[in-house]
Image (cartoon, rainbow, N blue to C red; front, top):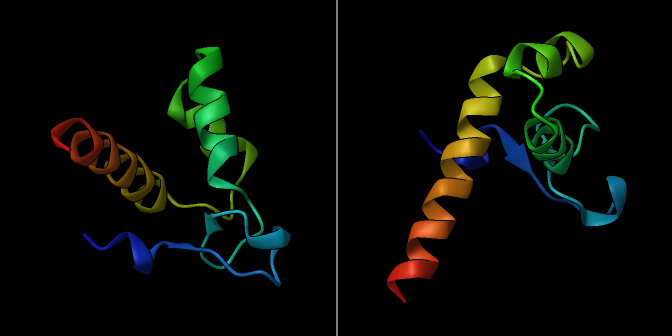
Length: 72
């Protein structure tokens, strides 16, 4: 699954903060929810413009980045 299909970054949207494509919801907001211990469904309920598929893509991208960093 390509995160570019679900995520985007543009200087014209939220100053270049990574957001879920088609929304102004920052990916960091998802991470903040999870860090607080909120279930994924709470985030999805609070941000209905973000799909479950988008959130899974964001988490997979974060995991891949961490694994790549650890291997370097």
